[in-house]
Image (tube, rainbow, N blue to C red; front, side, top):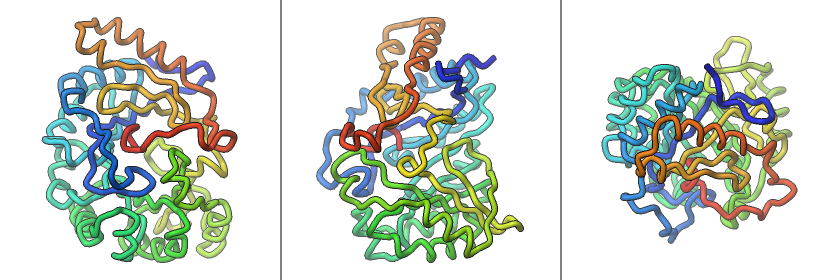
Length: 324
């Protein structure tokens, strides 16, 4: 059964689930220094509520689930939650996005719990630049987390690098790092989700894509994940690079995902305001049938596309509040 089909014919099979809006970093494009508008823990969906809700999503055709934040590894016993969610029938793929500062001590347990793929945020390989972009001197912790995760044996580890004025000169260095360690590199355009993100300096990734294609003789390819990236890779499979380009080449026509915040708000589009609050249903004794009907109605609200280009100042929403 696949009932999660929006009015534009897109099958929604991928949910990004925020398990916390807290983070130990202050990346300028995500949570600015001094931000205090976090959700109260009492508002967070409990593990029982999450297991129930994801189970209902899976009954409707959800196949892929990504745990996000904030920083998901800050949520107490997130490994236990991963184990519960990975056991849900019909859910084929459980992955996690992390800044990797807490990864070294949890990597083996996450793999054992059913997490098969990791996305790790890493915007620079220079300690001073990491501190400037991320707000904390954490490069050594991140690299150690990646080392431990690689040794643990995850199916796939992707490095997410947000391209901006501050780090555009490091793309070649990041390519070399990912080639050396067998990581997939994903380059991401800054999305105008608030003044801090807009000030980071937009970098059009289309010229970068063509330069890398020519330099490394890359060809079009695909890899597991179900997300929005368009990939290029070497013919021998030694290196793969993805491009997430919401501004220069949007991917709305094939969007297959929605986002659920830690307090139970379902967002149908990162660049629009359409949303449905699910926590009141979960905490008022609503039946499974009532919640399923609400989910179906919510999917019907999914807009055709974002309007980042037409209305770049339309949204003031920090990424930690929406699930990355």
